[in-house]
Length: 219
Image 1 (spheres, helix red, strand yellow):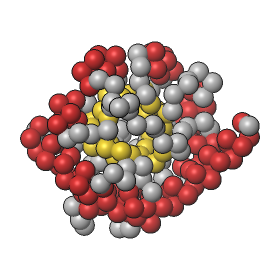
Image 2: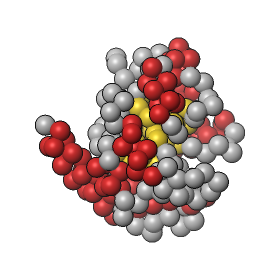
Image 3: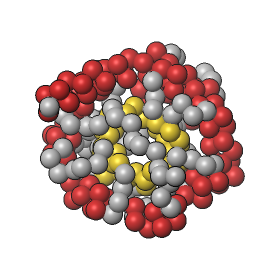
Image 4: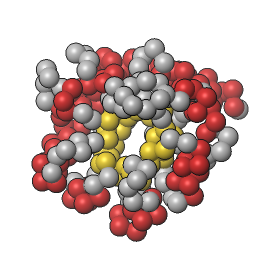
């Protein structure tokens, strides 16, 4: 069996359970998936392996097969949870090294912050990239935003999908897709919302509309 195709345009939620004060993380993610989230990237770096695996299994049960489950960096947890993929930071294993461990059935993503890193990740076999930070974001307060120009610069040099991350919300999600991104990755835009399903639905509608326009223009 080959790995699953990457959804385009994609709405990805990157987890941060500290933002879920009003409900549990699996419950909030389930609502977001019902609203249109395609990919759940489990990124809880402070959790030890056993607790991370428990959380991954709970999220898998909550979303069933309605969205892809991607585990951040922990290949062992991804394999044990039967996840759909693993996402690698720039200082993690290379995509080619990760592929040697997970085989051909898992998606492999890579975070990138410049064109050189994006090209290298693509060369090493990444299936998709997450690029940013595009706008200012609380999750990376010391990192200067790169703006839409970074997203625009990736479009002519990449042949794999890439998502924009960093300060993405309902006001600018369509802009990054029009700039060339294959979708968006968000954290607080959904997890801080009291209505995660409705918020996800609005984001998905906006990026899908922008995607259709860009694809129509390209044709």
